Length: 126
Image 1 (cartoon, rainbow, N blue to C red):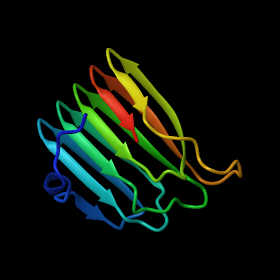
Image 2: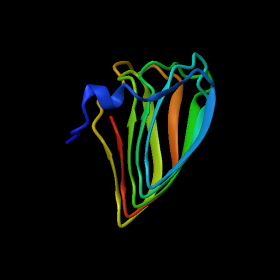
Image 3: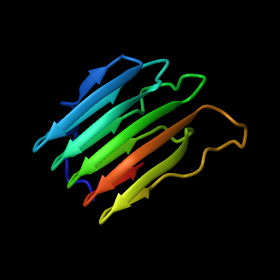
Image 4: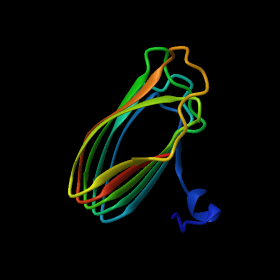
């Protein structure tokens, strides 16, 4: 359950860049990506809460990859419903969860690939 309010989500740092590299330690990080050719990013979180909002972004024709390294952190990745997401995240004393429906069409299209490791925390794609 997400207890954050609309006001809290509004303080997300917007970026129009096609890729990002961000980290958080003992803090909260909110990123809102608005790129029209999103290619991916690197995300490192230690004892933090992180939200990456991709709902205003468009994937590059080649797709995108986000590499995640997380310890004792919770990460939410928000994606449009029509994106195909491949999750290749290892978890040690943690978990990876998706609250999404499959893409509406079976036609192959660009994909978002999530890679990396979650240790004693969680990653949720929704």
